[in-house]
Length: 87
Image (tube, rainbow, N blue to C red):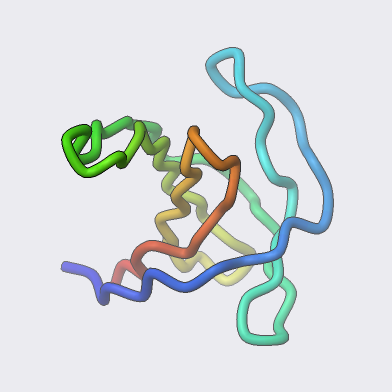
């Protein structure tokens, strides 16, 4: 079970490709730096197209202390958010 966050993050650098898409190597959230150690999965969702929402790409990022954080990229705008923190 996770805690919904849904706050913007700032990417600090782009990493390697994962399933043909670039990955963030690290990001900043609430003034703290997080380095991505591994990716635990990737999935996509379609938004409410009738309200102008687009497709979102999710990555389960495992950071340095073993914490799993779900990152979300809005494919329409390119913006990233921290969607959820897993416990």
